[in-house]
Image 1 (tube, rainbow, N blue to C red):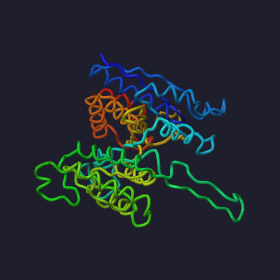
Image 2: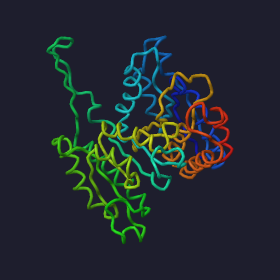
Image 3: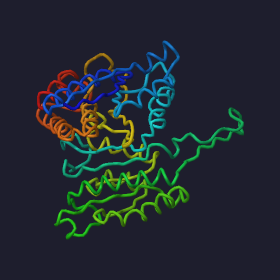
Image 4: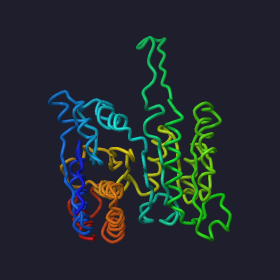
Length: 367
């Protein structure tokens, strides 16, 4: 029997609550599909920081390298200054473990959850591939004359050919695998009819960010001939924001830099029904990857057993898929879809018609 060792950081606020439900569902999937999960728990987060002043020791980063996957519940504590935990845990692990891909599947499970007029599950089904180690998040820059009327603040976007190319290649591979023949924007009818069509859209700002996105554009154009079944497209980030709302069905796979990816995936989360179902992966295909729900720690709901755990459960499904348990990962998502469409009144916290624990039980039973 295959055994997977997984590091778990429940984290802050409602993070431990949704993590428990994700583990419950993953265990049900493991039992059904015949593999074993060993969970190794770590207490990093706001409470530990307030007690010890320690965010994430160097020894922990090295210990995490032993794992293929980390499961993260949430980061963010109301008594800790914003940025300390996010940079010290989330961003540090992304950078030091070289999790250079942020993968965000965007899928609407029930039309009633979408705020867009006349849009249903058939219209919202795409993937955002976000570069996760460079750009403005690299932290290059500084201040002059800080705190004076002459203050200067500089923040630089770092884009390397290596970083751009590996992100583009991953995105092309994702698009190549999807190939489900949906009538994406710009495709010919014959492409769709034979079921070979998939589309990769580069999201950028080539008309203003002429240095950074010239590099992205050239890499995109040079790589495209190696993926003849993938149609390529380009859109400025501001246009993407409009079209996500007006025509989400135009999109299949979108690839973009770190900052733009951070922005458009939050918009995509609302289009797919909200942060209650949005999950993502921080991927190092050759090393240690980390999976998390997108909703944050939601401290005002801590301990009330009302927070929606479905995003956390979806993150668990993504993790199992990444670990090679593809059938288990798919089964978890299908169970989530079933429960949303038969048992859940609303995806909002406290309005589901069931407690956090009960929702986890329902999804586990649906497996």
